[in-house]
Image (tube, rainbow, N blue to C red; front, side, top):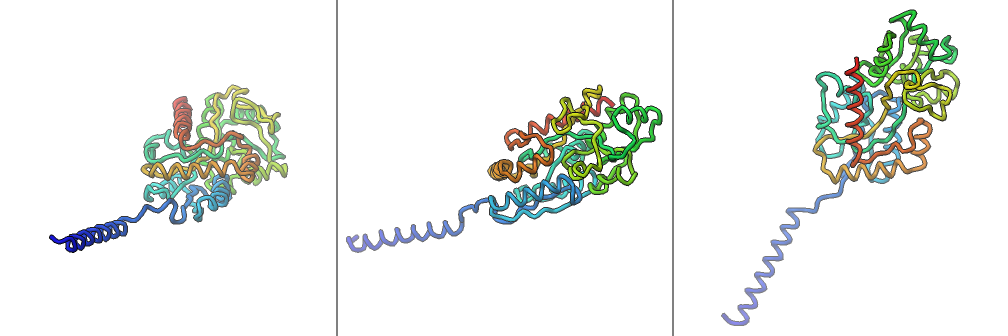
Length: 322
C-alpha cells in the first residue's frame, strides 16, 4: 500500500471514530441535575394548621436554593393517611414530598397500618415540641386538679378536642385515663375548627401544640392546664407537666419531611442539605420560636430515620399499657 493511500485510510478511520463518539454522546446525554421540575409538597391536613404553616414556609425558603417551585397541596383525611397514600402512589424520584407528623406516625403503632417505615425515607425532622391540654380563658377549670376532680366526679362527661383516634392525642389521653379518669374525645380533622372548639363550647378542653394556637394564647383566649413532658418550659413555667403529676407519657409532637422509599440517595441528600439551610435561616428560626419548638429540632437524613423509629417504639409502649 502506498504512503498516500495509507494516510487516506488512517484519516478515514479517525473520522469514523470521531463520528461514532459524537453519535454516542448524543445517544447518551449527561444526566441532568435534580431537580429539573417543580417538587410537590403534600400536606396530609387541611389549610391553616401547623403542618400547613411549616410546608408553606419551607416552600418559600427552599425554592430559591433548589431553583424550582415547590407547590403545596393539602390532602386531608384519615389522620394523614389520605395524604400519605398520595405520596406512596407517586414515583420514588424526589418530586413528591410530604409533611409527616407524629400523629400520622402514631398510626403505625396500631393494627394493620396502611404503610410502614419501609415505605418512606425521612429527609429531615424540622420541628420538635411538647403538647398541652388547653381550656378557654374563662373556663371554670383554673388548674389541672380542677379538671381532674370534675372528671372523677363525672366519668365520660368531659370532652377533649383531638385530632382523631389512633393519634398521639389519643395515646396521651389514654395514658391519663389509666389513672381511673374517663374522657370523651371529640375528633376534628380541620385544625381551625379544633382550635376554636373550646371557645364555642363544643369541647371542655383541647389537646394541641402551643405554636399552633399561639395567636389564641397571645390574645388571652385560651390557657394551658397541663404540658406533656418531664420538664417545665420557660414560656409556661407555671404549667405543671404530665410527669410531675404522675402521668408517665411525654410523646413529643414532631414534624418531618419524607419521600417515598427507593428515592435515589443523592436526591435525598440534596433535599436534606437544602432543608438544613432552611433551618439555619433567621426567618425559620423565628418561626420555630413562635411555634415553641426546641432550638435543636432539626435532624438531617443521616439521623432522622433513627429518631422516627425511636418515637414509634415509645408510641407502641404507650399502646401496650392500655
